[in-house]
Length: 423
Image (tube, rainbow, N blue to C red):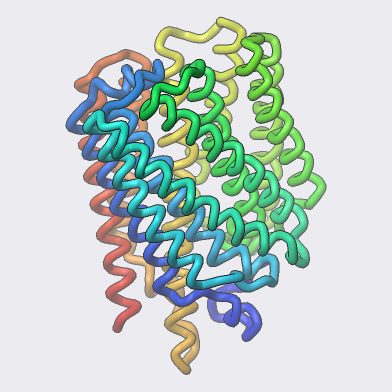
């Protein structure tokens, strides 16, 4: 388990990156978060259109502002900073970590602009920059995992995420080539596989793995047993592989089996985490765990709905509802919950490295903007779910307005933390 800020050992501190490295990743994620909601606010009709893999347009831009700009940006920054502490292995190259940020930030901006403006060449340039960035990150992750000591469940999730990342990059390049050069492929199947590899594979497995030590650290509780974590990972990995086979073959039976394995994996993970949190020493988990539990509920609902879709038992507009549950419901809500605990924690640790004891994490946690964000984000998510189920564009616009206001509140929180760190 990672120690509290005030109890960081000299060895753990030596493996921390300079504060500017992870904070630039998190700052970019905060910016892209607001931009994603702004695009959806301007083009609410894109929610229903993109649920059917409708190709280039503002919907594709908004989706990738979230998946690449917020989720991948946060995941890369968090793992580069925290995984070395967990595995007791320093980042192989700080310069490479900085280069990844430049390429990823530029690539996301170009990709989103190209998608929104229906310009395949610009989208292709952005996609290439993103793939190069994730390739360098993959090398850094590989080097860290290869020499890791301890935390075998976390390391195993890292290996799974790395394998998914390789397949994700390949499928992403194929889709970019399809848009830019007319490469012949079954776009619907490739796009669905790309979504599975991104949401349940790379980012999903990283989220499950980081949960094994981050959430117990926040709650001051024991971590789930390695056996339960590895069992959930095995089910999740099997679900991803079977789903890829189902999409390649068009077999609904295989797709139903994959969804069933996904339900088992998600349930096993949530049950193991709840059992660990019940043994916590901290009396109150704090408001961030409200978002964590909402995210877990959306994760479970997404795989249950996937099962219903595979069996042709799903309600109307199930594809749009599935996308909302998966991306903003599960992944975005979870990462925003965790990030609001990581940023003050890292600020406290780095402030304590100036020749004085680490200040309390609470002194770097402005509560008002976080409370505003929490309320607005949950309102936006609820409205988005109703909008996806009903097809009402006006509800999409209201959801996006609430989401944008929440994103601005979250940005206020981040700026205030940076200001306190500089004092």
